[in-house]
Length: 175
Image (cartoon, rainbow, N blue to C red; front, side, top):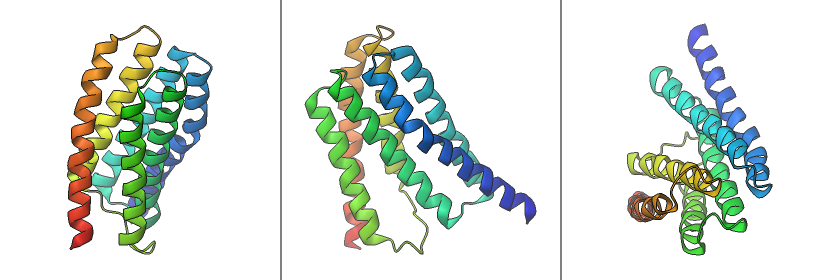
């Protein structure tokens, strides 16, 4: 029992670390420090992987389920906004990503009482992973470390996952 509590605390700490990285990542992007932004973003994505592994292996807490989703939404929204502002992402993909995040957040608040754990769908997790990959590529491209066409290709893939996940979440809400 103690081990489970400790691993849940570690998972929550990983998520809090991700939340704490949101502002420095956005600041590094806006300050045109692509390598710093890329390293910080990679660290943030790694905390999501660690948190997810711990949650799958040892279970998640109510707090952890909400923290994880909140951290993902804030990280994606802040990085997208900073990239758009600095010219690293086009307006259309910015609208897709921010719109999807806002709709999912609103739907989650409507569908799940704060006293119940968040249960993301697999397609939602796939979208979040694709979005993280796009953001890493966009930050790398902004610093000349990745080819810009890669960002365009990933933007199309992320749009597809965004639409699929929105349809799945809409179906979940309907039920």
